[in-house]
Amino acid sequence: MQAEVSLNEDNNEYFLSVVLHAILPGVEQSLAKTLVKDAHQICPYSKATRNNIEVTLKVNNEVLSSL
Image (cartoon, rainbow, N blue to C red; front, side, top):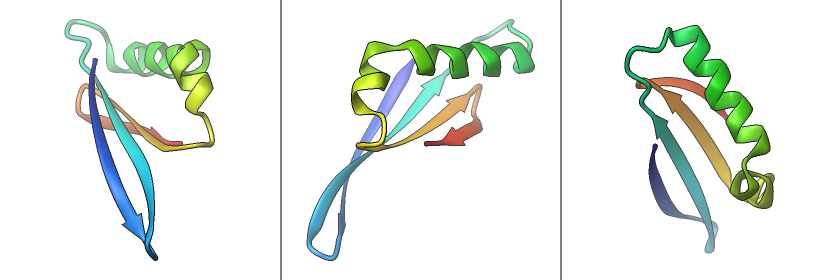
């Protein structure tokens, strides 16, 4: 897992956004997507930041979702 964190500005207000890159070699893409999506729902850090920062999930370089 690799995280790409950005500091953004909009109308003189600052906010964070994150792109989480999950690379799962040898795992079928549909299973990899399910695993990453499920992990994002139960991860304590994800729970703590949910609805506070924009998060984009990428699985094997494919965008899964923006939350």
